[in-house]
Length: 392
Image 1 (tube, rainbow, N blue to C red):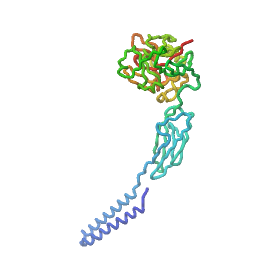
Image 2: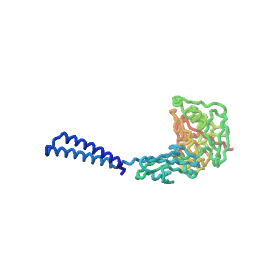
Image 3: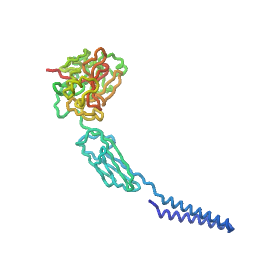
Image 4: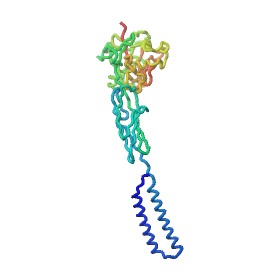
């Protein structure tokens, strides 16, 4: 118990003197008339005793323990850390009415250190840590067993871009944009999304920014836009082309290799559905799986997604870019004119049409999946384009 004896004693003396003075005054005021006089005196004495007892009880009552504080000073909640960095984790604890006994530190629920003091410093070596979100927790306790915790989340990232272990080539479009290229099996693919605004003959591709105008387009209209109509997004993620623009008004083709140059540079062509299947099968997908619709395969999507979170939301499941394809999430533009799924999905046209419809086949990669989606959708959607090099 935390009791101030000196304070209690002073309080008792002051109250005793106060009530004794009242008794003296009463004795002088009241005449000594037997029982009633004594009864009155006893009542006042009883009041003094009860009051003093109450004062002692209140002064001796145990004070409530104040909960200590604990804070992770560095890193900050929501920080992005690059894999390989040496991260200083700093914790500060404080107790206003006692002493901090210990501080414990955890990463993803595993204890990594403990200190019997109010501050704690720890150097986290992230070389072998898994890429993704990690929870850092600090727990502290005071000398009366009162504890509290602080938790933060950090994102451990890796450098995106091309696979440094592979060799890339280069191709240039009509506008002078350069693209990295990568050999995957017997195919050579662009390793970046197309962002050209002219066909190889110099004719321009109409840019449509207005959502209402985009929504009103027929499936045969050639058009492109940048995501959210921002040219900066075009520089990074490439253009979003209607199917008609992607194939330059040609009829669909299911040949392998495809025979439609479309929006691609000279010597290159739009990939058909069969060429996408060839890529997927080379990366491990079975023929039976490649022929299915919706999500198919195992980790083929992860093999063609860029690593890290520069252009993908976490967790970018399976994204290791082991193929060198370096797919980034450019989102899409719906047939209604809205923009969706930047950082969430990568979408790519093929040259194949769905018979007797206004739809064409395409592929999707998703930040939460490592396989590949295959289906058909409205030709008036705006999707990304990757080109394949013509066979020699």
